[in-house]
Amino acid sequence: MTVGDGIDVRFGRALRHYREAAGLSQMALAHEAGVDRSYVGQVERAEKCPTLIVAQALALALHVPLSEIIRAAEEAG
Image (cartoon, rainbow, N blue to C red):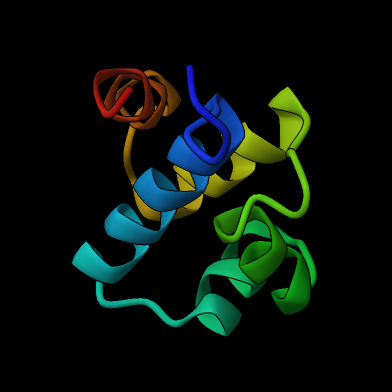
């Protein structure tokens, strides 16, 4: 694995993909998931790595199984 393509980076990209596909802003996703808007951006940029509880909340807010987001991140690697 090279620098910059870790699971945190790929998860952030996958999260952004699903958020944009759902037509949600970072603020709207954060509100639905019960997290701070800046936190969503930090996860998408791989500056923060969400706990499983937060990752599940984000997935629920997107109406996507968490496993689907994780699978997309794994397949991107």
